[in-house]
Length: 606
Image (tube, rainbow, N blue to C red):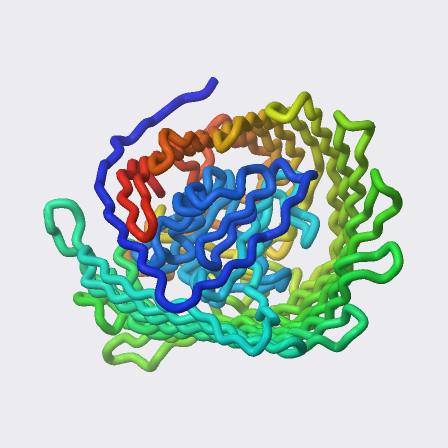
């Protein structure tokens, strides 16, 4: 039985002046007749292509509320997504209440891992909308195609340089946020000839402490960051092209008012080389990419008053990998999407505690660990006559996880004898059917099975403080893989520029990874409520529904709304942690040429 806890909603009026400087350029994302649970939101010049919705600027304006929107603000408007907010920076995206290693988070198909044990640096903070051509969100039974996951995936696709006849195009954006005296500056440029193209972008943001309702200042909510990227593309002839991409991101003096620590510095370096071929016989969109990324993150509490014990907590993440993918056209009604990939991720985090009168105390919070992964996936798309579309997907991964140093093994051996690593195989498969009744109505349903590996924190975390419940957490190297049986139904309607979509979904999670208090263990964090250790629970259940609609009221006025509700219980009938309340967003927008005025209503966020 579904129970509802509806928080009050706050109305606010937002007036947005959109002034396009220079020659702005667009690149709409490709349409896909097979997709029902995939959003593709174009972020270059506010163009949107949704694999289940319309290509309209009005819907795009809803997703990207204004040119100064962060990537987190774009994600927060999707009905499937909710953001865990620990401050004004570093919001963690969840997908139908799945989070962390239950999801795939990819940058142009590349794996990337944050370097913070306290989830203060989800990969999304190192990406700006100006870096991207589009973002892709896949739920449920679509989310494991690029990597084993039970809850779905985010894929942030890097904007490609575009060829032209020696033309230089660009876009300049500037903004100011009165709530935090925040500055926003952004510039994107593209130069292309017939055989060579280069694209570069830069973004700068600086915010002071923001003020809540009534004008109350929220301390430790400031941040400053700079993001920069450059990409090149060379036409090699015979439908071959070579791409290089680089993204750098540096954040400074980042406050987290909901946490006991702040961040002095957070940075990422992301690089890739991609070889592409448009077609070769029955194959199309052939792509081979090699990549690497390096993330650094430094937590500190040096600016906090009344600190019981000063701590420094640095962390690093290094990932290298490759993937190859292509489409095989079997005949006019059947095709295969194929992918082969591999990656290696090394994580390390430590903590040094300084107490007056005693020597510094040092320990590993993420003992040095490395995970290697090799996987392959295939998706078969089949059209049956003109009314049915079928889709079958499968994926398998091989994982090796090990502790890299003797020091890390010594840390883990305090609580477990399993210090020699693990070897695991995961399996994922799903089936989907879509019934096209006519040009206006279609109904789709899917069911599948998916698995995921425990995260580094769940396996090897060492006294990781969770501010949401006040407990220290300890990992468990003996955890089993978590699995889920997912099902979903979706009904879609379209007439002219009006769109409506309603979805219902369930997930039965087996070997659910959670944590329970261990009274035999002593706390490490001053004032903590106790110590919890990760374990597998028999099962858990998630169920919910989503809805979205866009209705043009006049040629200049449109109405957009999204709605989502999720219910979750564990095997004992207790509510699952982190389940968000009813989420609703509504927008009425008037726009004419370069001027738009919006009235927005947003439901609560976590």
